[in-house]
Image (tube, rainbow, N blue to C red; front, side, top):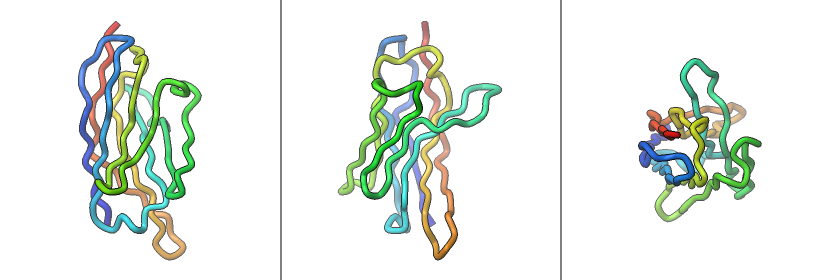
Length: 119
């Protein structure tokens, strides 16, 4: 089991910045990748940024150059630094941990944190 707790969402004006945090606990040694997703109203959940256990990162095209995923291993925390925010970045942001248990890939989710960008 992995528990994830997100924080750092809020209301910001377009062009502003926010940093989201995702604190992980439990069987974190099984984590293969940490990923941030987001879901806007009436839209499908989409991948924003991901980091493998080896440190490889990938980003959605819509956030490349503006968002940065990072981690602090000592704190078991993953961050999403979001700069130059746009109204279309408004969504609930979810932290996801993918763990390998035997031959199975298990997903764990945080509760989500709301990000609202005003124009």
